[in-house]
Length: 435
Image (cartoon, rainbow, N blue to C red):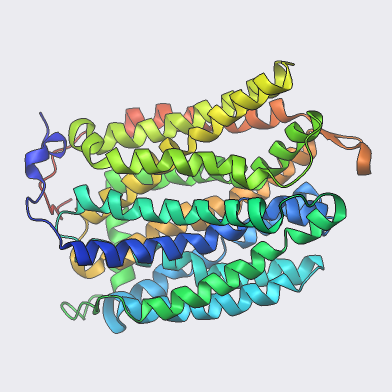
């Protein structure tokens, strides 16, 4: 049996409860901010601001601009210059102010420009919180999934707070405009996270080997076969991932409208995926110990494929509304496996196999393909695919959701097969930093 399948290779010491608690609060606040706007911003842009699907896709791409610069700026600053907690504070304070400004905008270009600026500030913080947690956890493979699941809980909470409390009973134009409160909540949440970042355990930059430029070393590591395959497949999976976050809320709204249901439900329904993610993250360490990184990540890619097929089939089947919604909700639950088994496991693989003094740059470089290039392309492609399968205009516009989701499914199927064939099944020691 390979060592990366062997639970005995993991460190046997454990972090203190206080440390795990502090890191869990960090993850909760980090993803509370994202959970405020990400599940419902597409519906807000479409219904309140009048954006079409292509423009919504452009905004989705704007949210992925930031990490294109992260490996060469923030990665170097964290690895060599500034403590991680101070960079987090700067990112969230500045990002919170930008999000509050975005709340007051209605025109297309100001929204896209501010969205791009916000991504420059927020998205790198996702990799930084991962890196900080890995630095302070003693048994990373067992403890990180538990700490990270509090980020999932934080992502879930805003949907229920905003839709079931603040927007409860609101319909029509008042509901469409009211969804904008999610942007203001994200801004306030970001400022709170900035304050909390100053209380996080000190995570200094690495002073060793200062003659090496961290991003240059990170780029060298990427050309190893295991990283190259992972980066290529991640880029494609990120496109499929963006189909979900750009089009899921409009898709749910179409299903609900066909069933005669009005009101704010899209975020609450989509939160089923994050609820499932809690269970997946809780068991991720055990799954990786038994299945290894390769088959855990492949399972995540397969979940993306299955979710697209479920959505396509639910819309095409012409079933009673209750049955259609039940199938769609089952598809939402697959998000837990998509994120946990692919995204989270991939970040853990990179942390396990990279030198400590360039780890932040490698994490951020990988994030370029996950959240930068892949998500940027995914937002653009998803919006154009949706418009390609559109008939009618204005209030008479209709979308062939079956064809839209089958397009994403075809790409996901290619990812599953290619990853299984090309990614090496190798032996890994705990803390392995070799090629």
